[in-house]
Length: 191
Image 1: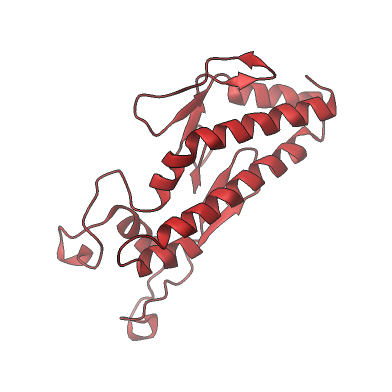
Image 2: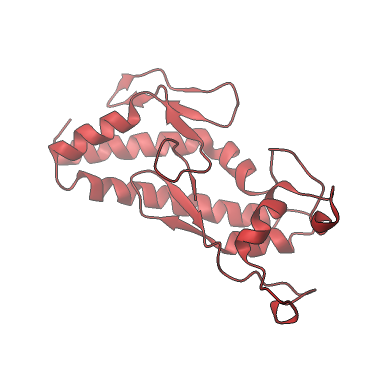
């Protein structure tokens, strides 16, 4: 699972966290953390809990907002995967990404699905290769060891298709989410 928001149970990769933002017209000091990968929104999870207590349908409505954002990001990642040189691996992995209905925009990899390879199909292997087996090599590269030479050159933490797309869109994602949160609060009259 790769969530756009950290500090959730099971989170393995994040672009949003606690820090600052704009909510209901108040400037909470929205900003990007120095690492460049994280948008920090002050008191986000505390705010969500407060509104969940105020209205029984808040969570349901917020999930709709987050799902739309996650689906847009999922589609953008798939497009970006097609631009990677020798993109077959990236495309196959990106096909296994799914937007999940959560409070915050979340995309999960269906990691146990079989990876479809034209050069070495799973029927020729003792143990089938899954999308989860290939994700990190397709995203971050390899080549240093004999077992990772089928991947593009290692790129450190920058990635090839998933994280570059998230980084390009992080401010847009934050704005859409905060605007959606504000809209839900106004519609429910709980702000």
